[in-house]
Length: 405
Image 1 (cartoon, helix red, strand yellow):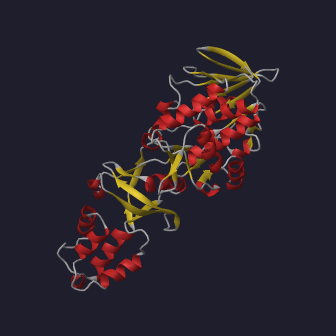
Image 2 (cartoon, one colour):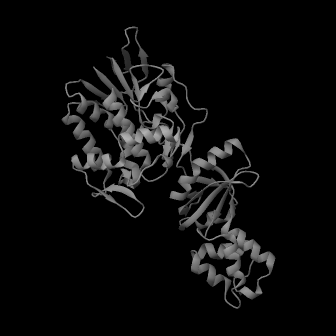
């Protein structure tokens, strides 16, 4: 086999398509350990598959250097993704958030288009072919094997994913294969885009099912603000979820490893500063505090904030003493959320960490450590924020690896 692609997810299928388009006479095989391809594509975006975002920049990603990511994205930008899928019969629509979904609202549409195009190009797709050994031979070829048998190939693309949602097949074993060929991994590998678990006695967990826009910020133990994100948040019986939480989770978990005193704070009035809310309360006069809060927030949260600030719900603005007012301002605009853990790789939408980009020639995605080996997708140390950015990294890096290999 002239080119073997290990992993038939988003990046692997994209690499297969572009390898076959670049060199139609080449014999290409995709090996995947699962019985059916594309489990992660099918569960993405609530089963609708958020294919990409209308505007993608290097600043939407973490991990490798922004400059390196920028160069790679420029080779196959979001516009190229939209064009390719249109060519494959999948029209995309833009939602208010900027996310692009198939007009069918079905992830299956996206997966079918990729598989059908690969098959049209005579790519051989083999499932139930988990690779357990990848070795380089003396003549420069690779031996790829598992319980199913062995293939020898002069070029290999490793597109096995990271560790997020391991039941889909991305259980981190691809890194083991890369390590055996001389690669090293980033010192930290942890879940990204993951719901957070709060302490058992954190009262807002009682609001499970309530959602609202919020501003979340990560603060060092000394109080320095490190990062903030604004977006929708969902209270759960375990703690916090929703887009804003998934986005901030990576930054919070990373900072926590440097400083165990790292805090996550929530402003339930995004866009409103503590001083502004304080001034509003002072100007309230004979009006009801509870009415003001309920106009701004879901009723259950408004009532809980009053309870936590030890304020009688019947109180009016002019009955509020300074200490109680300050408690309410703090609870509403800078509430400390005692995060004690996260839901782990089982439910994380992405992986932070992986093979550092400086071990890869980004013009080609070929390994600097092991010539003939190419890497793409989540196996690399690149993770995007929520909104289709991780898929765009898969399409862009898969395209470059496929064309180059």
